[in-house]
Length: 328
Image 1 (cartoon, rainbow, N blue to C red):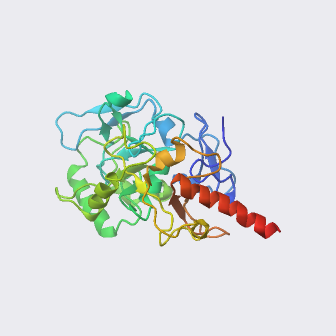
Image 2: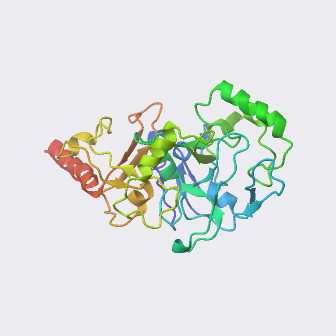
Image 3: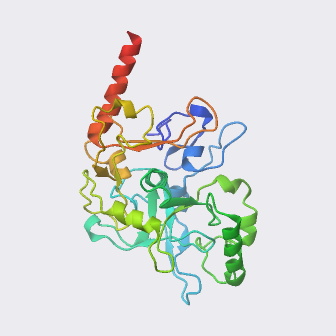
């Protein structure tokens, strides 16, 4: 069944001027801005479009490191349905590939077979909702970040780009580009992104630097110590990252904060994927709210809030009570 609402923000086509694209193969509907695609300025987006997950089916990717004597590849045999950031498997969801690092020589991550979940060796993918939800959260913001096709990322300084370009001059002749049937993501590509600058091609989870922990990896470790109350962290991939309920956070979305009865913090934790598609999901009590923000219009502020069932119910039911009072 094809939806006319964006899977990431749950808003319809045209909300805040955001235009939806629908995958011609799987029917996935996403706003261009929410999914990380270039905006269609004039007219409507092309109907001849496929999401990242569908476009990858049948393609072969290099997974070996630059300089390896033996080039190892893996073919994406079918549309990915499991996420490296949460335990949810199945369903047709917005997905992005997961790479091992940013830069022109980042490679798709290989996940080993998981017998508990009956999953073979496979290329790592993440739910776009999980990646954006974690990457822009107040607790773990920046620990997961999106990259362009050339490996650059939003906020990358010119010094970093020049450093990567120097490395590229030395190594670009070595085989090992992330996608087997594409040209190397070279210095030329980095300096001439054009419209691709606004296209989020893949995500990266921050790792150690020179074998040492960083502020990012310390935050990730703390988050992974949290126990999702919905799944109990059972059958989770090793790369999963739960978050704590946002109720009564200092910077919680201003419309939600007054709806909570208890002003204290909540210590329940849950994965973004479990919040969205996990058990005990009430029809109207959304456990995850996401909106990337807009440059103009009635809703300009970004929203990214995750709630346990209790606080999700408060956000919804107290909103309805407020509406009833306003109508009286």
